[in-house]
Each structure stands twice: as structure tokens, then as C-alpha cells.
Amino acid sequence: MEIKVKVRFNASNERFETYGRNMYLIYLPFEEDSDSKKIISTLLSRKTGTPVNRIIFKNKDVMGNWIFQLN
Image (cartoon, rainbow, N blue to C red; front, side, top):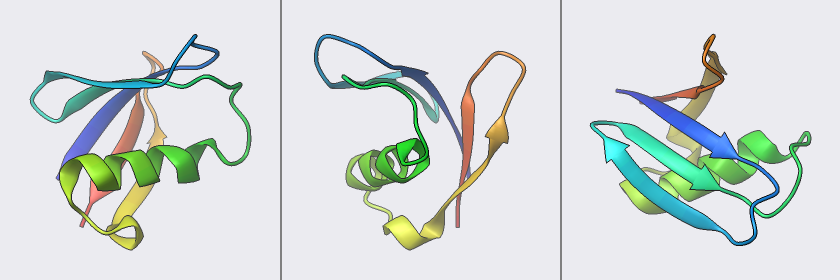
């Protein structure tokens, strides 16, 4: 299953919202860095109930959405 995540960095507080089928909006209170993929995967794992090792980052689309694959 493919999941699209819109990420807003430097937010005032952390939030996780659903805005469509397999589409999420995540607000994170820090800047994007090399650990961002790991943190977003962990948040998706908690929300979907899927183990972290089964969540794979695929790429970013032209709209800036982060695309993850759940195996």
C-alpha cells in the first residue's frame, strides 16, 4: 500500500492529521535533516500499526509529498 505524507517542518507543535485515503499531514517542530525519514516512518508506524521495518521511503513527488510503501 502506498501512503502520501505532506510534511510541514518548523511547526510550533507536533501534530498528525489524516486528510484523505492513505494521505497524512504531519507537523514537526524541527528542520528537515537526515533523520527526517526515520522519524516520519516511526510516526507512520504508530498511526497505521505497521512495524517500522515494513515502511519504506520511496521518493518525493513533484508536489513535495513524501511517498512511503507499506509492505
